[in-house]
Length: 502
Ligand code: BG6
Image 1 (tube, rainbow, N blue to C red):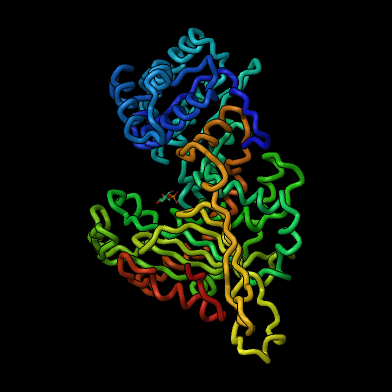
Image 2 (cartoon, rainbow, N blue to C red; image 1 turned 120 degrees about the vertical axis):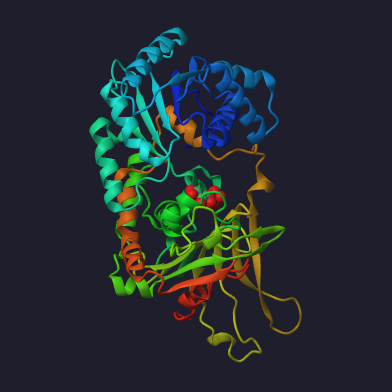
């Protein structure tokens, strides 16, 4: 993430993709590399290596990636740019279940690097299922491909999910940190590739007006909402073992929470920013089992219609256990135990198969004293919210009260809005360009550090444990296309609050 406008070209490097034939590579990685190439932000001396499993030729891989690019590109594909990018793709076979194949990979890669003059800089991108992360890293380490030497860098990009609970995340961190140092590891959370998410830092710390009121003296509570219309679809087997909480909260929702709640970093650099984020996540109060149950809501969708789409009951989804108690909706009430936030609840909710797609952080300010209006016909003041919109609207909205024109004193709530699209002519992007570019220039600011990942898992662990024990008890059913389980409304209602109405 660069602070000033001029962007430098990354140093020459080899970009090695594990999972080159997979969906992520076709849908996001190659279209992002294409966008970087079109913007002149790929190095001249560059090569892409696609790791393939079964005797796939470089030509076949290039064809497949070109088809993917045409399908998923975010802007019209210029043949010359695409051909130039794909011309530097080479398929190499390697499989961690056949360790010898990594000796072959090393030999071929080193030959290719010499031919392309990439200077030995390497980025290994693990776009694979998570159970392959450690085995691949182990083999890369064994053959010496991860060791930084003679001024050449070696980096490992790890996709989500990073672990399935605290113990597995710790084990994966330990394993990787035996092979690499922290600065070589880039743990991706695609939410940090979103402009509006990165903008939270800028909104808070590049403006003098927010910081003085950004605390328990002025903020009543914070709402973080990530609602999706899509059901689980073809991901039944992954999702049923995962659930809404694991899939979204310790990663995406906690990224939003940590950016909103962190202390100001002393410097805009990876160390300072990531330290503050990890600190605030570790200040989330660890709840006991009874509190975790009281402060959470779980839901599972039943069949319904969303627009033109028919959504089948979660329990009838292919590869979902018919008696599954996996949640497709989760809402939590969290407290952050520090001076800034003591007594300010953070309400989080996320779910699938809901009536609308919406991602936002809504900061609700304390109500103004009403006494002055008691002698007027005004019965209530509407609420002051600062809303950071991520989907479907990207921007910032401030809701405040204003006088309705006319002789009598009447007050109404209005909105002041900033929409990204009205100000900047940014080319449509996949959201991965900045992340990939940052890996190439060696800036870890938008990536998760080991302590941050572990703090996130630690905070959700009580909910995971309590829900596992509770089984079907307390799991609410909600209809696909609805606003979610009633319990999520009640969670705020019992505190005299409600979710922001759009
Ligand atoms: C992914 C989850 O990490 O994020 C998906 O695995 C979810 O289940 C997706 O749909 C949401 O991302 P976004 O950018 O659409 O909010």
